[in-house]
Amino acid sequence: MPDRQHIGPDTKVTAFGSCFAENITKHLSTIGYNLAKDRAPEIYVSSIGEGLVNVHSLLGQFEWALEGVDPPQGLWHGYRAEEYGCDERIREQTRQVLLDTEFFVVTLGLSEIWYDQETGGVFWRAVPQRHYDPTRHRFRVCSMAETKAALARIREIVGKYIPGAKLLFTLSPVPLAATFRPIGCVTANSASKAILRAALDEMFREADGVNSDLFYWPSYEIVSDLFFCRFGSDGRHPHKEIIDFIMQLFEAVHCKSGRTLEQVNVLYQKARQENARLAAV
Image 1 (cartoon, rainbow, N blue to C red):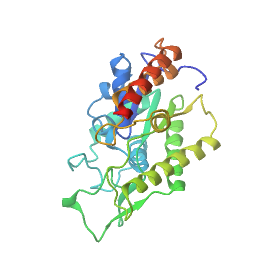
Image 2 (cartoon, one colour):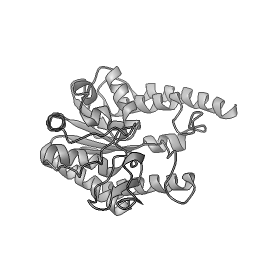
Image 3 (cartoon, rainbow, N blue to C red):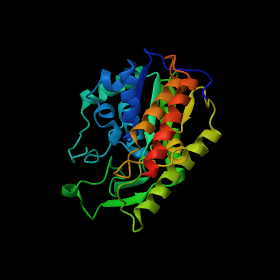
Image 4 (tube, rainbow, N blue to C red):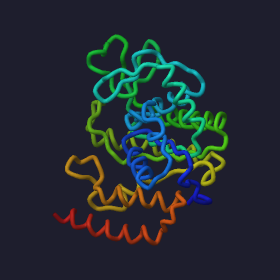
């Protein structure tokens, strides 16, 4: 539990990374809270924030916006392989949004990455087919040490440029849909999530300010351990009642909205009943 509830209606919140961050953004926006996605919809952490699924893509936005580090060209692509360039106007807007942020929610998604062997730069997502060059584009899995270093670097940059900001990490429960590894996708997903979770845990064990300036939100564990039937028909996205419970629990724990844990526990019991019904179908 945090030392207190840090997010009020006027607290400037920036949430991005993996598709699960979108659920937090939608929920807080619905109850009238101050989200970067509403304030600055054009910037990349708003328009494609849930598509930034690996630690390098997440770290890259902080380094680009706050430290002026331009990435190698041709690495930033959207869902339809559209290319995002290092637009200076977008960079300046992103910089201002990050500098104004009081509470960050950063969601990790996967450990598998594609990178450019010549520059060392990491793609946001997989290499678009039309850009794929077998002589320079490579695939690998981020190590735990590499992941931990990127997470620590995010915290270092936030501490340097926005010293009063709170930083919360969460791990998306949404599994891989496919893998580029020569193993089964189920196995690859288990390894991918384990790397991220272990890196987070090790960083938190060594960090100061845990539960006062640095937080972990257990969305992954809630989906994995508290419900019988976790995912819908696609086998990847949690049932609506699970998402609703997670969002309202987040609100009760972190937000000054008046929602209580007792109220959320009632919702949890109903969600468990509905989930048990789904599991029995």
